[in-house]
Length: 121
Image 1 (cartoon, rainbow, N blue to C red):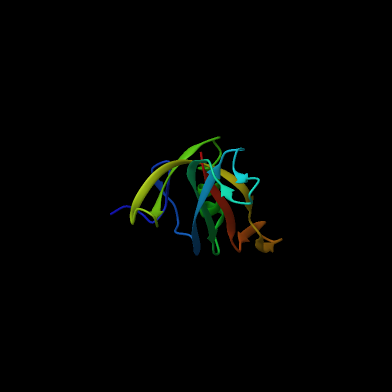
Image 2 (cartoon, one colour):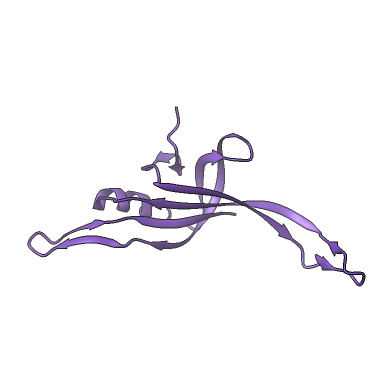
């Protein structure tokens, strides 16, 4: 069985929080007409995945971050609309990783989490 989340075909640690979003993309011609009626020229729908991981070791956070270095990459995830695991091409938004602890004696750092969004190409 496939992992909960894969980036470029490689399983990564499952996020603590996972949010599936579906964005409808309209053309510039969408808006209200002279009678105030909404008119839409829908171009497509795109998926946005919001992921937040809990505490991570240096190896775990490096593994996840290194997999999203490319401009575009594949993500396999549970798709709410299809009700199945789906693979699509995404790019990553901003990434944030707050520090949990810093040990001066060992120069070791642990991470209290990692947050990032995947936006469908």
